[in-house]
Image (cartoon, rainbow, N blue to C red; front, side, top):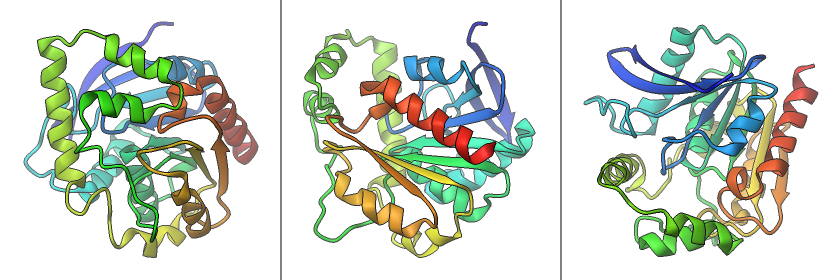
Length: 260
C-alpha cells in the first residue's frame, strides 16, 4: 500500500492530507516545520494504524483562511475535521505546536479521542525554565538546536533549498508567527483547563530539548490527570525523527495498553 494524498474542503478551507495504513485511526498534528513529506516514523506507525497526516490551515499546500488568528481557531477547526472524516475514536498525536494544538482540542471535546500523545508541546509557562526562541534562530542554529545527534542537523543543512521549498518555509513561518509570536508559544489560560483532558494521555519529551526544555515535562504530567511521562535521553526536540524506533514503540505500546 502506498501513501495517498488528497485535498479536502472542510468548512470552506482546503486541506492537504496524507494517509496510509489500516486499523484504528491515528491523526498526527505537525509542528512549525509543517508536514510536506511522509517520514519514516509515519511509515512505521502505518504498520499498525491508519495514519492520517493533515497540513494545518496556513501551512504547506493547505489554504490560509481569513478566520485563522490563533491556536483556538485551529482547535475548533479540527473538531470539524473529526466530523468531516467521520472519526469517532481517534488516537491523536501532536508534536511541538501540534502537541499544544492537540491539548487545546482535548480540553474542548475529548469524546472522540481514544488516546492523546503530546510530544514536547508548547502552550504553557514554567517559571524559571526558558524556552528556545526559534523565531530568533538562524537556519543553521535551528537545525543544530533541534537535534542532540548532530548528524541529523548536518543532513538537514545539506538538503539544497528550492524556490518552492523556500516559499513553503516562509508560509509556515508566517503562520507559526501568527499563532505563537505574542505571547511566545503560550496560551496564558491553558494551564487552568488541562484538567479537562479525559483521554488517556502520553507525554513524550527529548531529554536534551533546546527548543522546549525538558523542565516543562513534569508540569504537563501534573496538570493532565492520569497522564504518563516518558523522557527519551540523548534526544532533542524531534524524538519522532531522531529516535523514531523508540518513539513508535512508546506510542504503539501506550495505545495498545489503553485501548484494549
